[in-house]
Length: 217
Image (cartoon, rainbow, N blue to C red):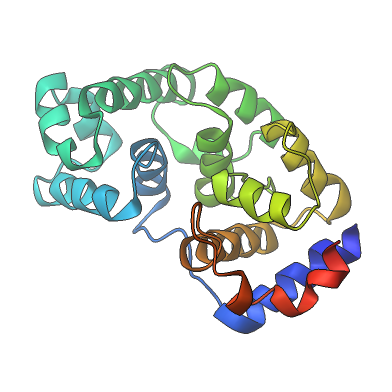
């Protein structure tokens, strides 16, 4: 299985190249982006982040002081804006309550401890928590999303009933923990999912992994 996973990565990297993901000016922006991207596409998140920047509110201190109504208004483009405003506020309560609003104090903590803490924050699930760990805090954890499941299910590497944890365990058990590698691998799977492994009309014949189909079966 390890060789199969590595082969998939090599094929995707050769086809797409480096993805430079997650696009952000700093780690705190990554965290807010991870919360905003729940149930929406990245273009909508970019608009919300842009409004936060333009209003000079994209910092932990400013967001903490910002009234809920104003925050919801600024992130409206990300959808479910009232819910997401509550989730951002919940994260900030945890961030200041546990780490005094300092990423420098948060970074040295072990990944498993941070994951438990993040999952205890209202509105933060496994994918969001792991995105924060990998992309903002540089912890070697593999992020799983809908694209990951769809791609690996179609190649017969997982089962329909496999949940988030089962998929993540597949990568974590078979691959050496490496933040940069996990970062790039996940980004490449997202790229493949968006451009080829579509939900209703997959482009299997021209998929970069098509010539390796026998390897995956």
